Length: 89
Image (cartoon, rainbow, N blue to C red; front, side):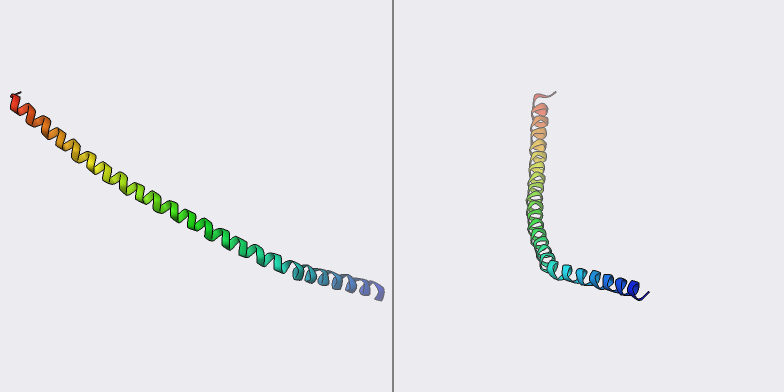
């Protein structure tokens, strides 16, 4: 009975030591991976923000162009109405 208990205690201690050593060896790699992820996330966020600003500027330009075309269309309509009225149709 004592030999079984001793064997289980050694196995448990070995498992705990193995987990602890693995954690100690992998700790730096985990920290480095976290830092890389943060840096990549920051770079991707900056890219997305830049694209968003460009799209917003493009949308504003499209709105200005649309208003200009509406104005031009109204001017042309008024000119056509005036020409029609002058001819008496």
